[in-house]
Amino acid sequence: MRKPIVWLSFVNNIPLKWKFTLIYLLCVLLPILTINVLFFRQMSENIQTREQNNLQITIERAAKKTTDMIEGGVTLSHSIATDRNLYEVLDMEYADIVDFYESFNNVLTGKMRPFMSAYTYVENISVFTENPTLVAGSNFFILDEAAKRTPWYEAASASSSAVNVLMYTDVDPINAKASKGYFSIVRRLNEYPMFGRYAKYLRIDLKLSSFDEILEQEEPYMTINMLGPQNQVLFPSSQYLQKAVLQDNYGDDDLMFRSPLGTPSYIRDWKLVGIAEEDRFQTAVQSSRHFIWMLAAISTLLPTSLIFIMLRSYNYRIRRLSRHMEKAKNEKFDLIVLREGKDEIGGLIRSYNRMAAQIESLINDVYKLEIQQKDMELERIRAEMKLLQSQVNPHFLFNTLNALLVVSAKNGYTEVTDIIRNLSQMLRRMLSWTDSPVTLQDELHFTEMYLKIEKFRFSDRFDYVFNIEEEAAGCLLPKMCIQPIVENACKHGLQAVKGQRVIRIEARRADAYLHVQIEDNGKGMNEKRLTEIRSLMNGSLDSDENVGIRNVYKRLRLHYGERVDFYIDSRPDKGTRVSFRIPALFPEEGGI
Image 1: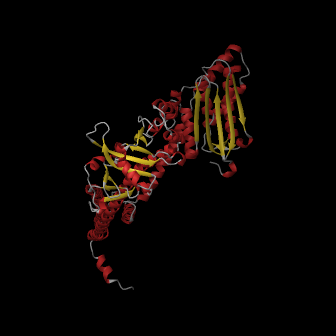
Image 2: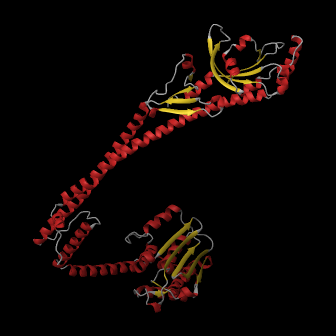
Image 3: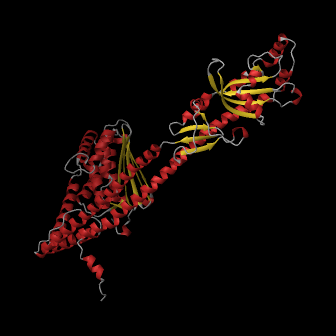
């Protein structure tokens, strides 16, 4: 015998309720709380990383839009700077103003208009030249001493680069007493040295509002500034006009995001700097905190509820079982009436109920009662069979006898011997009823005797057709399974029809089943009446309505059970078809 483990014995002595409590505290609650704390920390870090990535994407998106706008202006300047006709007109000396305007009208008129339409963010395009014979106007100006004192010219002339991007303030052309901010792309027009007699400059002014709009679009996410090479604020333009300067140590590094505008020399060291609000991260973490607390509450309450339900289920059923076992000691074998379930305790309850039922059955001599009940069931079946036999409708017998009497008396017929013989054979068979089955051939012989009598009644207006397969003729079936259906067809279907009346009986064997079909061309039934008859098939035989067809159906069910298929189909003024399918059995197989 194995020696019991000490700690296992200690566990076995703990009540089931406390076992579940310890399991809940140590295996459910504590792990859930630990997991939730770790999950919250990891979630907070992930949220902060995600928000930082989103903000970096935001500032890079703004930088790309800004760079694309500047690069578009540079591309435009290159298109203008490579126009040979422009160089030729700007370098030509004109005798007078008339001579200039002839060239202006031929070459320069509307030359810049398509560019202004294509580049919507361009505010103005200006071409400056030292040619004194050119008349200033439209987009063309004289590069005189006043123009050379402007900030854009001083920066461009001092630079060795062909293209310069400048942010500066100059006199407002509309109000000479006011200043205005400009963002210009300045380019020397020296692509064709042969036209280098006079110095020429191209200045493309971009709209400050276009840059401000790009930055304002990202304001819901962060505050973005465009910085120049010396970290001076270029945009928003309002801060540039106020000479604001952004220091490198402005704000927390976690909240500051940078994105350079590009590598070309004219925008090198230009960048966008965005400052995110600290509340943005706290708000995101706060929303996740609510979610985590809700998740923790659900993950705690749900296991608690499940454990409570399982504990109550075990405890309640075990207590019920214990009480009934105490009653069994006093010879009270009451059954435990409850939903026992399919677990081990449910198995114990079912075993106890079976044991109590068996003991109770033995005590009350249940075996004798079962034998008596079986005898009573047999008597009931026999009585039902007698009832079915006695309910064969004699209506056609009276009609036949009356017809025979009237026809014989009126016309002096002597050819009634066959009819009377058929009638007597039918009566003899019905009176000598037995439970033994007959072959389909014998049943059809009996049915044909009935049909001959009906043919005598209706004369040439009635006919019948048998279509019986040879394999089906030897199959067994209960007596009088076809004749009542034929009688029902003659009585209810054909009697009210004018013209030729026909009954067709077909039988075949297929897939180990016997298929029998009786069809007439009578008046038929509508859908409502057909539904009523189908619903009466399982009704009591106490009613006199449709006794014959219900008689057949119930006897087939009595012999074959669920293996019977019985169908009734009918259409008004077309006829009715009754068919059934039963197992195909032969006498050598032992019968039904």
